[in-house]
Image 1: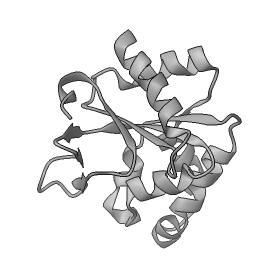
Image 2 (image 1 turned 180 degrees about the horizontal axis):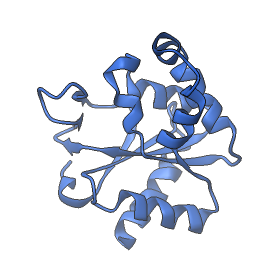
Image 3 (image 1 turned 90 degrees about the vertical axis):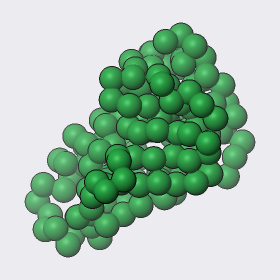
Image 4 (image 1 turned 120 degrees about the horizontal axis):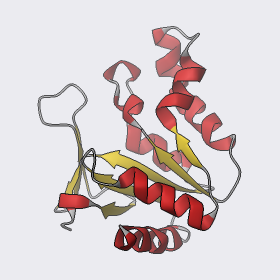
Length: 159
């Protein structure tokens, strides 16, 4: 795990000079993404946000239409509510809900223009392609050459 934390720290430094200051920590469920984020949060004294929890609270009173129209703004509000130049985001599954009709990576990129965002992504990164879910699943997403610093963990450690 210390190797992943070291890679994350380097990626945070690297992302600081890019247009999108986005680091994606990608791995399957149980691969250690949350543990790595907790270690980095403690070491760098930066906030760790449970996106599912915070977005759910904000969307509770909204209709389905309002949710899809406002999810981008709500994510920005969640991130703006915490201080620091680096924000760690965990539990992003809600962003992949087909009912929201959003592109999760695009939302993260837009949020990372003024602050470095480190996002835990449940999925795979192989041969420059970032995926979420399996082909045929309603939440399946596949992105070639994502504009982000990608750190694979667990069995996804191929570039």
